[in-house]
Image 1: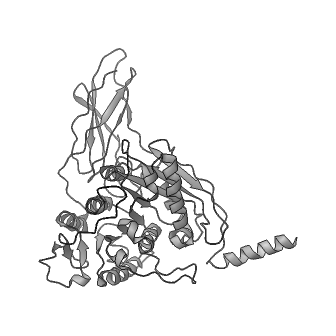
Image 2: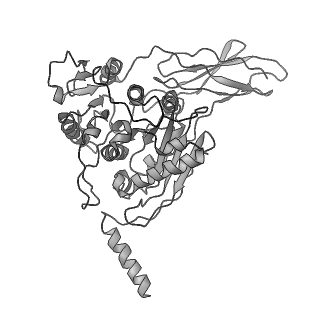
Image 3: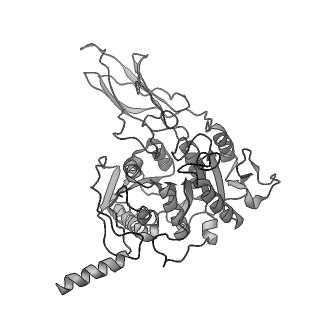
Length: 452
């Protein structure tokens, strides 16, 4: 009995270090299957002081055929049960996969099992155990996937809301491992809210040299200054101002259409990461990250809509939005106007089209890097017979085949590349082809033909 009393006392004292004690564990999630090229590890909640008090799954996608990975793109969801469930499908996103594939990187989607009323700071501040668990997951996934370089590969970090707090704080903890950071509707946890014994984090020279983009909806305090999310802009403005004043390579992109939902931000975020990964990933896996080039930078006034080459900018550069190059500056100017970033390149053609004697078609398709996949055209004998999805819906941004969610992740259940030609008569021979459509309406070349 004495041992049990002492153990209980020790547990209570440990819990008093934080803003709240360990919540009841959430039910283990129902996740999409993770079979190669997907891999997954999951960890139970911990009651040890300083460890992660929530269960968490890490799902990773590895581009088929890549022998040595050059980096990891991490897509981190926000706070609350809905966001955590949204994170379950992040690694299955076709457009984010195309970004990862084009740079020989893995794509990771964490999913924390945070109950709705629990304090999400117990995971979105990495110092409360999620940093340690993330590093453990990289080691375990390296073993499971037989890619030992996962343990040491650099990271490109995207985060929404509480996820932005997580990736921004990781920037201050691990700047040497980070290629670039995208903060959608959130800022780093410079001061711990759960453990006041932890000293505030500092802007190191290494963190200031990492490209950062702050992104938020205009209804989060920029033009709409009341409501649940109105405090977003004051917090982001302070972080941007402080970081930029010290020479940080940081920008702000205000979404003119949204509040806290992610909207069309991926159509700027993915090209921005593409530019940063191109500039910073080492040619040889395992070598240090390359310094961020600054001679190609463009600048813009904060909350302005026009960017110029840094050499021509006449304003105060220490308060200006920093953009890595001309291409991204032009995308940024279109985004802050109406999010309608132009794209003149068609998506790749679908591959591996299969058809059964019953007219059941299936295929594979990679996404357009800039504009994703909106859907598919199904052709029989050279004539269009259907489009997929049959009834497109888009309520949170552009029409997207995977039904992009509030959290910038595919909606569950995952959309399947399948169609059944019910109009074909038994015994008839037909030739089928598939065409991809991206989200600006451009068509891919036709797929190779398939016959039953």
